[in-house]
Image 1 (cartoon, rainbow, N blue to C red):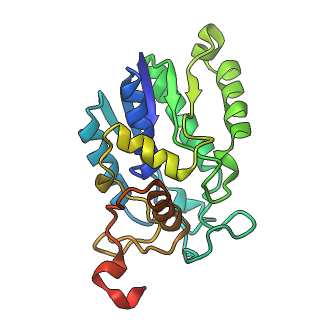
Image 2 (cartoon, rainbow, N blue to C red; image 1 turned 180 degrees about the vertical axis):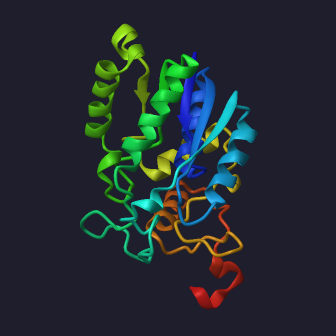
Length: 230
């Protein structure tokens, strides 16, 4: 069965790709050069795709910096040591998963893929509204009412195997499937060498996941080379 897998290059999306491969899917991976703060995650996505032997990897270019409105696509500082703070953080990119899934849907229809896999998580996450089961259910309704494949076959189906898992459980699942997490990148605000800051929401959740899973964290953090940045 053909499946489109959204691949950011981070921990969650790499795990989802491994799960899809393990479930016997022929995977077509889709990443986005959307004007994010750095290209390091796209390099990670390419590494992950190559390591897991996908059918095709597409990097779709767009520039969400034209809109801004996020610390990832505008001149706004990335919050540090603020994981768990109330409200939706400034790292939320307006309508990002809606945009990404819409393009993944077009890609899936063009490739006759019956599924779209996405690594959203509603347990250990930063409070983004487009990572919740309610959002996925709503987008599935868009698929079945607004596309030829949806009207004719009720497909593609959205698959989100991590949505109710903790970050530790995600790490354990990926390790069991042989995911090389040293190939992945999660930090919102790495330095020029690609070293993770260790203090943004994504870094904190990633570190906590490895710690709680009892798995060595392969991430290269800035403070490991520059102790004064602790």
